[in-house]
Length: 70
Image (cartoon, rainbow, N blue to C red):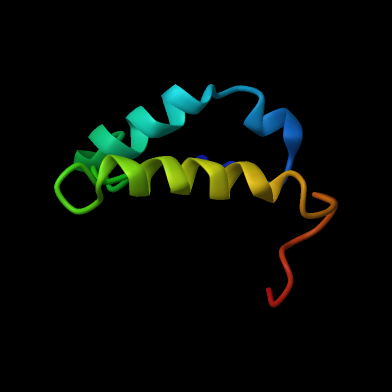
């Protein structure tokens, strides 16, 4: 499975806010065990809040190692 380091600004620059929203709303490869769709469980406002939360990762510190607690 290809995982992204969302703390890395270079990783985040590969996705627009709209693309992140769309992936969470519609899912991505859920049939292969990847990102499930959240269209039926989250409101559009909540999905945009999650996009903002993901964007905050790049501002919270270095991507030189695993997140705290790992």
